[in-house]
Image 1 (tube, rainbow, N blue to C red):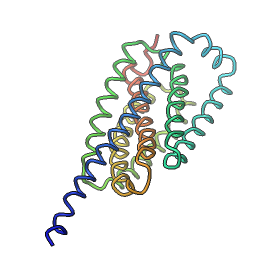
Image 2: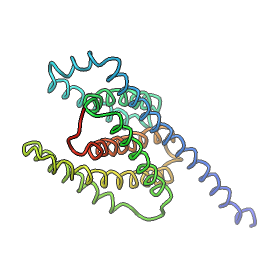
Image 3: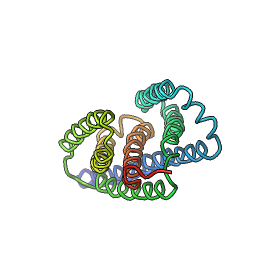
Length: 239
């Protein structure tokens, strides 16, 4: 009888240990992907600038389409193989970080180092804060996710319209809205991945689940960073 009563405590301890291990993996992979992209951006701007400019300068639309298709293919590959083949998913995540870094370098080359540094620090601070809240919160955030995705779709549509309007002020305002949306998504995704581990962690590969979560959080962080770049640049201040 006493053994039965004491049984839940070891299970709870094991669950918490497993959760900490999972979160460490997920945030570790996500941080590594961000660092890989940062190195890719640096090399693309400072070492391979001629090659990158030639790639995007001669056929910019074709190059962009190829990059977008390859990135969506890698995202699909990561998510599909996350629990089946974690090693492959991790490799694809690192490759995705390299490709995305090269693509970002084309835009980031237009901004000063101060703008990029300020945006990176701000994005890191906001992401870390929201991730901690999402990871530790006990509240049901499912409705929040629905509202955030609806807001994101609205922002994307409005941004496409602004491509024709070419309004710097609208673009600047959208940057603040984008920060709010992806700050919320960072919190929601962190909360969602924690709950997914608690629900399915003993049924699937925790490493694969961590890679999948790392990809999602990486995208949240990168979008936060890019919107902060627009804010720190004042909408139009460039090199």
